[in-house]
Amino acid sequence: MLQNHNFTEGPILGPLLRFAVPVLFALFLQAMYGAVDLLVVGKFAASADVSAVSTGSQLMQTITGLISGLAMGVTVFLGQKIGEGNGDEGGRIVGAGIWMFGLIGAVLTILIAGGAGVLASVMQCPAEAFPRAVSYIRICGLGILVIIAYNLIGSIFRGIGDSVTPLITVAIACVCNIAGDLFLVAGCHMGTAGAAIATVFAQGVSVLISLALIRRKQLPFALIKEEIRRDWTYIRRILWVGVPIALQDLLVGISFLVILAIVNTLGVTASAGVGVAEKVCAFIMLVPAAFMQSMSAFVAQNRGAGKPERATRGLLYAVGVSFLCGAAMGYLSYFRGDLLTGIFARDPEVIAAGADYLRAYAIDCLLTCFLFCFIGYYNGMEQTGFVMLQGIFSAFCIRVPVSFFMSRRIPVSLFHIGLATPCSTIVQIVMCLLFLRTPAMRRLTGNTDV
Image (cartoon, rainbow, N blue to C red; front, side):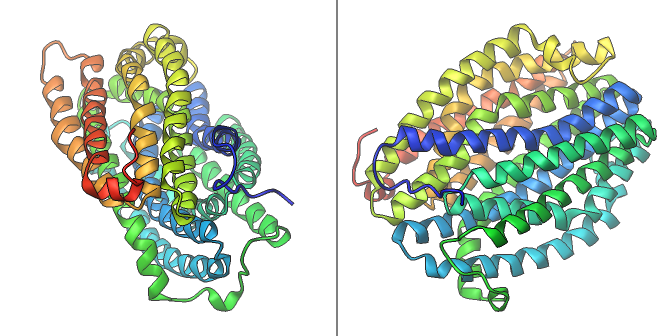
């Protein structure tokens, strides 16, 4: 049996790292889904296919962010009950979550699959790539229930302090995705459609394996079929935590879609270059993203156990470790971005465009170690309303206006457009520091100085 982490007793850094490392590897393998799609398409298809996959995957990443944000409500709610020592409610929480996400999945299937053409148009997808982007979005939309199940199961495991099981399942699924891409894209020459089919199939495999492991694993609660029902008491609590996170993730994702739409007007090379750079960014931001998810579970358990000062110390440890990794990735991204973008593309112009955009993200590497840990901390404290507001403000009042302004400067530089991201991150960090000093947070943290 895999061991669940109890974060409420003993040392902080060791257990936090042991939890965060499997989360990091799981996020790495998740990033491999879209990266392998782009890598194989970039090596065995045309630049139009690269543009289509980058546009379609960015859209699906935004929708997935909405789903994972809602699922964070399950992680935090379940983690609090585990911290309280009240695991009996876990089955009812999970059952209500399954019912709610099943309904959401049915609605999204209709909207995404039926509106794929409209979504690609809104994204300002270049004409050469438009039909292929529509195909990618439609196929992923038809598989959205699988994507939802995958994210929900991961949130349940993290809520009980188990970050190893999701790692095992996503590792197997990643192998399936690589095999599917090589067979369908490189072997059958299906291009964008083959990449989409391989991605959905791989996540379906992950869900089946997760369900098999759940049947064999001793959970801290009983999960029976009768508890998969509409229970508004638990659904409201899940939504109370999850909706602000999901709304923030959705609107921040939309802000990045707006930036991509701005870049798409510059042509296929710029579109493909930014798409490649975004895939690289998915990897260089993995460490702070892992600590963000880990902090949510860590803080939720300690808040449930009535130990807010321990949660605050965990935040400091997470920031320190994350910063060391961020400095190394920032150096590599700024000075050798061409090596990173060259992994995903063969066109020299696309590689150069992606490297230019990536230089701006190198600056952000030094900043997200603070921001992501703060977001995980506030999510665990159920201050998701603030998380939503700061994310939306920075996205639409800083990131989008700056990127639009930079796109109108002559000559146009993808580096200057990319600077919109670190500009917004700085504003978010300042807001997080100020919020930590508010009376509401002082009461929650026991007036602990940070």
